[in-house]
Every structure is written in structure tokens, then in C-alpha cells.
Length: 261
Length: 304
Image (tube, rainbow over all chains, first blue to last red):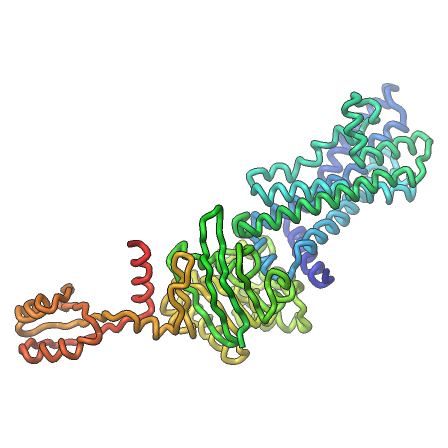
């Protein structure tokens, strides 16, 4: 992997971001919409006595942390789509750029954009609801790490599918991560799910993070090493997703990269 | 010294052979044209040379290294331009060339970008988004991008398509100069036969996935035996008709000019017979076969 190539690819997506108001605004728009909707709803429920401030923090914390898997996935798949729409993949892969360098760049951009969206959303939560997610402390970092890797897994899997089957299934680029969200328990405890769904949730690394966050907010700290199993599960999924994506790319090379565009 | 060696290259799609075992090479400083009717396998071959299509069998060596195992290293010194491949259209010309330049190890990046901007006359459109450019301007930007890394081997797919004649001529001069000055090797596909004839040292004719012929444009043209004799007859045209019938030659008449298809080697004898029969003419003109005639012959044979 060469740094100058990663930088070149980064510039390509950075310039595109500056010139794409849709890509720029969606970093801020959806987190704010979610925060407004859920925040106002929970404030109403607090006033009626149905909710307390701890639950509000858990709800808003869930919304804010969900930014990580969402952006991790979205950045990879939508960037692939943009290269397909621009018929730019041939230009890209007739240069010394390696496939893994391209994927790495998209992953890193995912981290950057997630960090910006997270910072913005958490500031909005403080400003509007006096709810400060940073009270959870340094543990936010490993949680964010697991969640973004989880998002990458979906991003890579969906990219592999789009590369194989083309843009006719491009809707997956925006929606894929939401398919798994019921098993993640962003807004509710996994224990509220039916038992079959709870079984699925045990294989979803992100569910452990949201459970840990709720436990932490409720005053029951979760030791960091408790998140080692979901982290390892995430890494295993990531390796499988990478393998499948590279297989898809190699499969495409047998048909010709032009055939995807 | 060969910069490119292709050995027994094949490509099969769904059990249908597209490229059926082709071998050729390109020397340093050589310009090779690849011609062929639609579906002959030109684009397939170019894609395999660039490593964006995996061959079914055979090998491609560029600068002595196999593209299958050393793609990234090889592409440091190779570049590609096609009218049919786009760039991110929201980005300006400057931005597109800048990010592209970082994909290569270039030490004098700023200087190089300024050079290609001037070489390809991009000053006026430098800060314009690619989406707002005309087809010809996009082609120039694509060509400029392909020169950013000082390529030793350049692959050009229809390099002057959509350019106006003046710019196309400038580009042809540019590529000829690049070869002459820097000994660059170029492979190009084009439907403009005059361009291929002007630029290429050798021409490879692909037909049905096989190399039908590979030679200099002049030698390929010589393989056509027929030429056209154009005469404006002023006396004894009935005798000419009789002579044509006797020699079993075909002719057409347009605007008073008789155009006779005749084998080049019997032309002196035919002209002697005209004089002998006192067939007089006020104008004479001979159209010698060129690369286009040869290409048309190959294309026609394909359709039979």
C-alpha cells in the first residue's frame, strides 16, 4: 500500500464532497432529523412521566452511536455507486491503484465522516436537550470502533453484491444496514426481542455495544474486556466480507471491468 | 527491445472464444495501430493489456514483467485514454488531474500538471467541472490525464474521436513528437484510417479474434491488387466499352468520368491498349489502394 495513492484517492472523494451538496448535507441532515424526532418525542414522554432522563440519554445515545455503522456502510457503497455512475472504475483501475487501497480509502473516509457526523449530532443533543453523550467517557472510543467495523462489513458485502449484479440493486447501498437494525437494539434492550431474534442478536456484534451503553447509563459499568468477543466477531466478519468482495472483483475481472459500468 | 510481448492470448466468454490465441509485440518507440471490424476483439485485447480483464490463457509481459502478477508496478509507466471512459464529472479539470497525479510516483507534480495543462490547451477550462465540458474538451482532458505520469507505453482508444479537425491534427503531431522525442511506445485503436496510416509504424488487423495481418500500413495497402483508373474520355468511348468487355473489367461513370477497377500490374498494358485503339481522354487519374481499401476488404470478407 502506498501513501501517495491513498492520498490521491482521498482527494478524489474530498473534492467530490465539496462539490456535492447532497453528500455534504446528508452528513448532518439525517442525524439532526433523528435527534429532533426522537428527542422531542422523548421530552414529551418525560413530561408525561412515562420516561426518565436516563432512558432519554439511552435513546439519544443510541441515535448518535448508530451514526458509526450507518456511515461506515454508506460511505463504501455510495462511493462505489458514484464511481459506477461516473463510469470511473476503468480510469481508476488502469492506474497503479490496488483494489485494497481503494477499499482502505473508503473505510478511512467512513471514519472521518462518521466522526464529523457524530461530533455534530452530539453537539446538537447537548444544545437542544442538555444530553451529553461524552459523559460516557473514553469507552465511547472502543464502542465506536466496533460499530464502524460493523458498518464496513455491510458496506463491503453490499459492494460485492452491487459489483456482481450491477446498479439494478443499488437501493441496497442506502438501506442494507437498516435491515439488521432490529437485531442491533439501537433504541431498546435485546431482552425485549422474541427468543429467536435474541439468538440472531448474539451474532450481531453491534448489539453488544448498545447493550453496554444502556448498562453504563443505568449505572452498571461494563468492563472493556467484555467487548472483546464482539470485537473479534466483527473482525472475523470483516475478513469474510473482504474475501467475498475481492472474490466479486476477481469475478468481474473475468467479465471485464467495463461490463460493470 | 520489446516493451510489450503478448503470447498466445485467448479469451473465452461463456464458452464462446472472443480472442483465439494472438501473439504480437511492440518495440520501444513504436506506434502500433489495432484495427478490426466491430466485434473483432480490439477492446477485449486492450482491456487484457491493461489488466482489467483476465485472459483465459496466454501471457502479457510489459517491460519484461507479467501484468497478471506485477500490474501495479507496470501501470506506473503505462497510461490509457479512451473517449468512452469518463472522469468524476462534478470535479473540475484541475481537481481531476490533481487526484489522478497522486496515483503515480511523480516528483515534480505541480510542474507536470502545468505542463499538461499547456500541452493540451486546458487553460480556459482548467477550473470548470468536467460535466460542463463538450465531448472534444473531455477527450483533451482524458488525453492530458493519460500523460501525467510520463508513460513509457500509452494505450489510446479512439484518441481523436470527437475532436475538431484542427485539434485532432495537433494531437496527432503531439503523439508523433512524443514518440520521436521520448521514444514512447503507443498502441492505438481508431476508425480514422488516415490517422492510423499517418501515425502507425505497424498495423495489426484483428478479425474474428485472430490476427488477420500485421505489417506496415504501406505493405498492407500493397496487398490490394486492384486500383482505380479514372478517365474523362473525349474520343472513341465505344471502343473503350468493347475493351472493358474483352478484359472483363467493371466500370462506373459519374459526371462524365469513367472509373475502372483494374489490377495494378496490368495498368501499363491497359494504357498502351488505349493508345493503340486511339481512345482519347482529357483527364487521367489513378487511385492507388490505401489502408482503408485493405480494411474494407478484410471487413467484407468477414461478412461473407
